[in-house]
Image 1 (cartoon, rainbow, N blue to C red):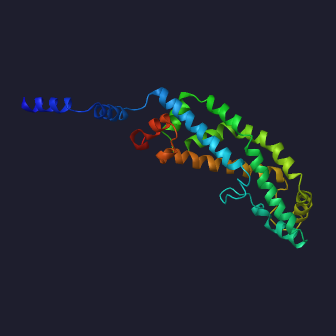
Image 2: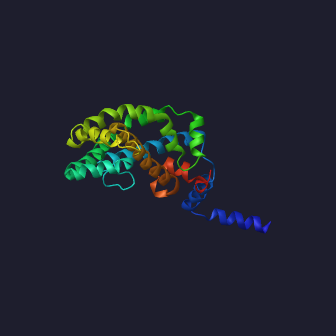
Image 3: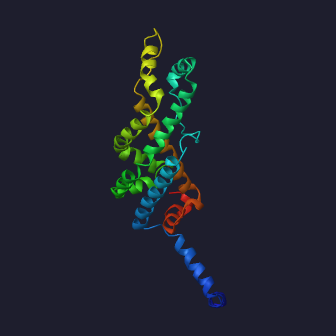
Length: 236
């Protein structure tokens, strides 16, 4: 009986601030509601996608990022050497820059496509992402937006590549190189190469953003993100 009375007395002596802290701490152990999870996942995708687009579409966003910089096609290194042997060093360098600038310009077109896909998420999609791997949201966007992104990006990339002189040399160089016996043939479709690299680079950065939100409390820039991704230390 004395123990009960002592406990009650101690509770009564707590300040309002202390009581509020107890209530908040108790509430934080409760799992987020279905509505909170749905809103939190959608907000996470929007935040991550917008951050990735801002990062990749800024000036030199691809060119100065070693993870996503678009190089001369790996299977065409000998073509690059042949171009440099012809005294086209400046054109080759400008060509590499232009590929990356084209990717940056194309990335800026992705916002509406990502937002549309996020709005169309089902509740099952939401829970699969919440309970999924660190790149589950990125994989969702890859599945649901890649075709539309390719369609939107293609003309932007083509227009960018058409501006540089090196593009004029590309097809003849590749065609002549492919005529050499026993060499591994190079795909002469430069636009598709840059398009593939642009999509891959954009999703690499989105995956980084997603992992940051899941793992880094400071990356959870709103209360709903803290609630959904902070629950149980992120172990869903």
